[in-house]
Amino acid sequence: MKRKIIRLLLGVTFLMLVVVLLVPVLLSRFGPHLYSGTVFQDSVVAPPMDGLSIHTGGPVDLEEFRGDVVIIYYGYTNCPDVCPTTLSDVATAIDALGPDSDRVTLLMVTIDPERDELAYTGEYVQHFHENFYGVSGSLEDTTLAATRYGVYFSKTDPDEDGSYEMEHTASLLGIDPDGKLRIKWAPSISPEALEKDIRALLG
Amino acid sequence: MNNSGLGEDFLGTGPLDSVDPTLSDQSPVVLDGVESVAAEGRTRGSDAGPVDGEDLAVESAGTGVDSSGDNPLNGIGSVLGQGSDNEDPGVLDSSGADAVDRVGTGEPVLVSPVVSDQVTGQGGEVEHDEKGGDSNDPFEPLHTQQPSDALVIPRGLKVTAFFVAVLVIAAAAFAIFEPIQVLPRIRLAPGFAMVDANGDLLTSEDTRGELTIYSFAPVNCGEECASVEATLADVLARVDEETGIGNTPFRIVTIGLDSNGDPERLAEAQANSLADGEDWIWVGADQSTTEIVVGAGFGRYMDTSGDEIGFEQSLVLVDGWGVVRGDYKYQTLGSESDKLIHHLGILTDEIQYSHGANTVAYEAAHLFLCYP
Image (cartoon, rainbow over all chains, first blue to last red; front, top):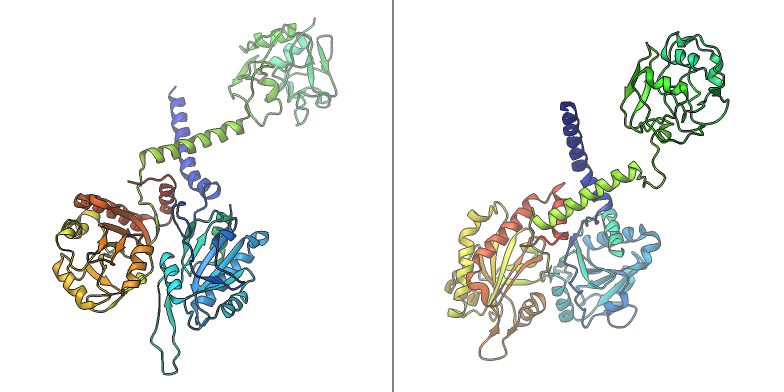
């Protein structure tokens, strides 16, 4: 009897140990994907981009991208470092998706409409990936859209040559296939982590 | 029927070690009148020759008895249910010689599913090994015969079901008892650039990494804003002691709806309020930008077209990632300081503890909507 109790206690202890060790493993393997970005409640519809145009022609209509993941990025073509780096990382992540890469689109909204013409913005982003599109509009419309997407930008004081830079929020915003704004990624996110998050968004 | 040879051999009246080695190629053994015999353990003793006779048939082929191993009789000693015409149910009386005698006499015998007998061959003693089934034993399925209509559930399925049940219960307990509470990640806070009472620029990027409560008021709000101001002052006074906010920066920012980005007007409004100018500041921007930030960004009503400014009393709690975590509207603000302190405490805990393995727990709390 005593032996049975000891066996039972040992069994229960062992099982508890197994469960404690197993739950994180199972959660990480079979549970919901743990996003590397900051995820919002799934009821947040992606804000519209009123007045902005896409370089392939016509106004930006996010409805056209239903069923796909759309990544929104606010940058500019004269951006010295963070923009090209981020765009390159996104391109790597999209390529890593394989056949699903066709279901991912990036829209780069220029925050420097004064210098970035729409066609040139499109040409610039297409250098990084064919799934990238340039978006531009008036300063007021750009400001409105940026504010809605939590993006701040401002122009630095011009130097002697009249050249200037733009300070801006460099985050990436992810819209899921249902058209909901679901996630915010830091610009420093790795292509691997981004790929996994996109894959999870695609479902 | 002559069972003496069998009985002696099995009971160890002679050294079974010297059993005719030809038996090793002649198992399995099927006993007439016996359900069957299978071996578990070693049988020793006996000088008996080849086992043969009317009561004991030795087959050179078939299943049921392990014919491998050095001991030719390895494989004899327990009873199998094959090769018998007698289907009477029964349990082998495993009390030593009697059990074997019954085998020898051809009485119907059926091994208990939970007991396998090990014949030692020492003085007719039979050892009982209560294994409850050994999955390594190729004869186990024959030992553990079940009625044909019984549902047999594989052990692997049982184990899987057990762990699934544990996980489901754990998940349900987590959702019900909410050991960890979190504030919802409601939406993105707007991006903005405004000036403060000193004329310095404050952007949304400057507030990254800190907790911020935003409020909205005209520069000459007066009594109308007294209640909200009292709430904010109370929060500011209590936040350090009651939330364990520690080194996490915390700030209250009041957006002047009609300041037009004028630092002097902002300074005047700040001085007339309960703001201290450090942890609680006033900011503003030109009218167009203000309307975009407050209206489109924070989703707050404001109307500056008339003589009186229309606005709604409200507060917004934003975390260090620029995500709205609390939205407080309407007339409930008079007694909201307790709630705000509570929510700041929850947010502070998440900032401090949601690292490493704890991330899973906090994400689970978001998943199960463990909101206050």
